[in-house]
Image 1 (cartoon, rainbow, N blue to C red):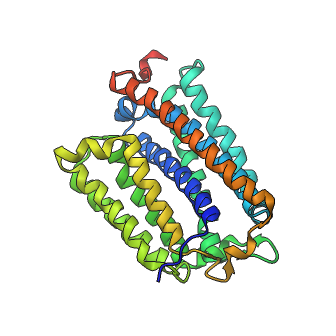
Image 2: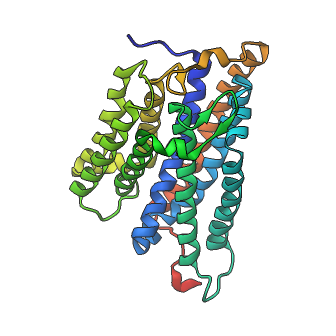
Length: 323
């Protein structure tokens, strides 16, 4: 029997889902840059700035909402992953510097645009892996000591489903990159890679914790495999290549993936509902989040729409020869 979700927790998961969906498209961009740089110049670069800016906005929005809803959550993450967070912040600054330099600052013969974008892509891979490690550890509980607020990466890695979920997610996003950015890749290859990633990541996810709402996993499974299938056919190809449609589908998938384990964390050893603030601040942040979320979604749509229409008119980043 599916358990109905707490409304305020549901909104928080929804915010995280949008954030993770946008972050996923940035990881897809990184894979395209590394493996198909020339094509990325025409099809990927023009979307990097809006994705990069909106990702940070939704991350802040999520963290603020999480702090009001579950005040103990951020100290748990901060203390348990302190060394990883410090590395994350250093790499995050370096990543921002590389894309800003690549887009807006003069480059020389040695530090050229391709070098900077490749650096951006590699760092993005590392940051994405770190986010997945934290998310996976909170779900499975392996390596994460809740009472001591500590994290042991070796104990985490020893649990194979942890590794499988991260590897499977990476493969899945690699397969979907061609769909999101409309790359010149055989449709069957995209389908096979996506399916392989979904199988590895999906099977691993089933072992991360005791599923409380397993039936809802049908929704992300169907959506994930349907995207590359629709991309293979001309009548539906443009539909799934639409950036807002794609991100909407990804957000729905992530939401129900998280919902499948609700309300438990740490391998069903911790009930999320016991951590709720349950005071006047929580009620106020609930209404504030609804209003702020609507405004943010509208502004995000308008911001993306400007860039997407610009891309459709053929406005893209300058080529390497312009440096």
